[in-house]
Image 1 (cartoon, rainbow, N blue to C red):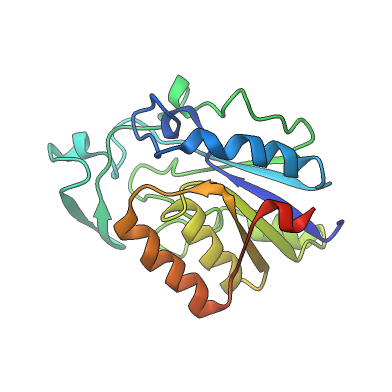
Image 2: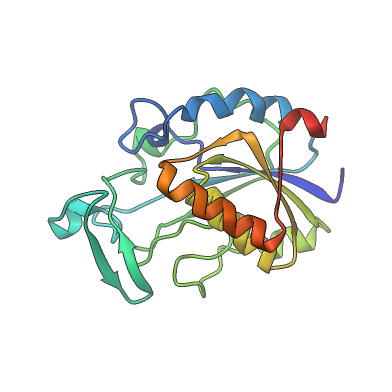
Length: 204
């Protein structure tokens, strides 16, 4: 599938069991991702990569994670525990990933004053990560998304990828979400745009 790519979102230590922002059952995505990876010539990984004092950290503002918010230049910012800090163990990609042929790692969220959920655009919806250009230069039109988390970084990557003209499929059994109350609205947004949701065994 030379015109397709597997886009593996944020499978990092802090989002896995024991991490500072662990996604429930986040480690269960690794086996299907590795299995699918063997079928794709094009594999791309993303990596959350925050500096100390990042705008998304509750500790930066003396506020409570998951509960409090702040107003940023681009709108309301959810506040999280400190996570995926540059050069930390928590920012490392899971060593259980077996994707040696991955051609690109996209780092996001490294600007202190803007968060970045999507693999394509930071949360100001103006600052590009460069991923779309990379894909277009290689003639890639179809993207299969997986990783963490369904309701945030996978979710917004799917929406932005669709709006940028790529055909998007989210792999259900290779994606997990943070909270039920945010998973359902994100899923509805995908459905409204016609974004496909599939199981990995339906593909291969």
